[in-house]
Image: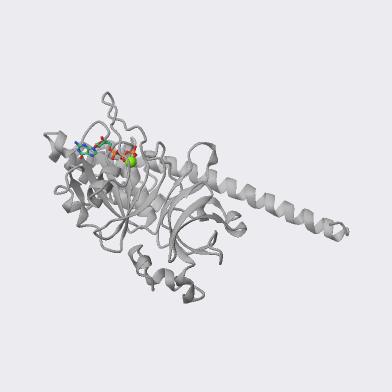
Length: 351
Ligand SMILES: Nc1nc2c(ncn2[C@@H]2O[C@H](COP(=O)(O)OP(=O)(O)OP(=O)(O)O)[C@@H](O)[C@H]2O)c(=O)[nH]1
Ligand SMILES: [Mg+2]
Ligand SMILES: [Zn+2]
């Protein structure tokens, strides 16, 4: 087997899906970047920019190749013929009107959820990322950057730890290699880690410092509101010289959720447990007597901010999930109508 594929994180889960092991010689590769319908794939013979085969093009958006996917190319190594089954998938509901689930990064083992010790830090954003991470089937690590710029790093660490029981939190100066050693220790030689978080938090800086050279451009943030300028514009998978793979994901303006109710429950396990103690099974945790959550807030063991964040995510998820279900039902209805139309025409002898 090609050494280069092993460095890209090839594991039996993917080779077992191949019809013929010989395909590994040249036709199997990993998607390292995507530009619209074109993908950059690294396979045995090297790097190729390829198109999608008609079959792949006709599949739903969520099944289109994304960064991190393992794919099989056609004989001329110019098209993706098949996307291998994914081990994990970080996805979101598309921004704007598209209202479709979009794949962001596939086959990732871990998610570094990056946030910085300044105005950008928001527990509710972390909770949203954590729920999407649970849904992806990846292990989360919260990386708190710009720890070198503040006095009270501990308070940020404490707040970050409060977003999910047991979640690891590393406070770092992303520009300093020594400070990033604890982050590096999370990365196995064959594991794939996606860096996610708002623009300007230091995702590309982490990548460059871990790689020991400048693989991605970085950009200053705005001084007034500490927001980034969307320096990274496309997702890209990079191989670290010390082993392991990092996907640099541009800061996303919108991170909408759908169909992740269980994953929200996993992040807010503490709240789910409390809910079981409310007097009424259908308690909305607003004004009801015997509400265990309201009691916990009064006693100071539950933060009212966390309860609001939980309710907000659940509400948003429920709405988006039903919109998606309606859209799919309409699409199915339309497909059925087209099919019935065709059958009628065939019966009448038309084509
Ligand atoms: N002092 C300090 N500066 C940092 C740290 N991490 C990042 N920066 C700076 O923050 C700015 C933004 O960093 P980037 O790495 O470009 O941020 P990004 O998350 O990749 O942003 P997008 O590509 O826009 O999504 C740069 O000027 C970095 O040098 C840190 O830990 N400490
Ligand atoms: Mg960047
Ligand atoms: Zn209640």
